[in-house]
Length: 364
Image 1 (tube, rainbow, N blue to C red):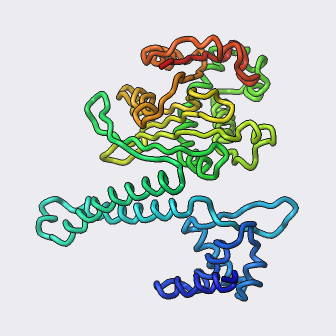
Image 2 (image 1 turned 90 degrees about the horizontal axis):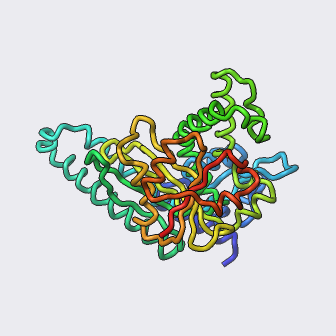
Image 3 (image 1 turned 30 degrees about the horizontal axis):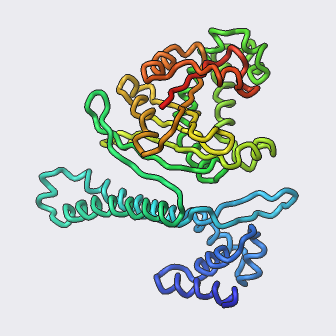
């Protein structure tokens, strides 16, 4: 079938289900085109006005089907089909269900007994949330050959938590977006750790070039500068990494695990396990472990550490690194069975300045 006919078929389909035909034709064009598409090309190939193209592009962006891309030396805006749009489709359906659930949850129980239709809707939403999650999990496992899932854990005070996990390639758009979702908590955690380290080891600003920008700053300026540095770390897009870093990170993936309160749905902590690529086979490295400061001493960090085993991932060695001033973390790691990792201390990359880090490992 010619590409033009495919585009028209999409237009007809979207028109039949009550959506805009032009929206459907534009979606179809993105579906059959590998390279990024400019606004000008959309106008020309679909024979539509620039204003119409602009409206439909915004709709596709909001729906999460396409993304804007930057092309060097090109002044025009370019767009391309977003990766994993069908996973996004599942997530959108689940979000719609959750919005309906929120309406029911606001109705007192005694009133639900009167409004039977609302009660039935609540039961339907509860059922569909579970089924959609199972379907999405099955799709990713069997079709995409990727992995994600969830399970329930109990905190030290008996409170239930939902643990959600997903495996993502390090250089993927999906991993970048996940870090954007979690960076607020990550920055809050590492700001405290890094500032405590600089105060405990004032010579660090002279011994590590990456820390020189913090030299002589007042407490307020230090915090602002630290937030800016951490934001850059969490917010650097894979495409903006140097060619050396992109080469080094090929084949690397992460298990990103988040822990939410079951009742409120608020994220209380998350952890990232790095594997693949340059990481030795059978080994994983904890790159981020963050817990909300208002949720500490509730067993959350321990639950996150156990997550890799809980989701069925076998490993021989689990590695973690932290600042020597972070005694709380070091004590906790030792409690969890970690010990000094002399191999990592000896062979750590150049950006891990000697004496500025403690390397720990747990062997299984």
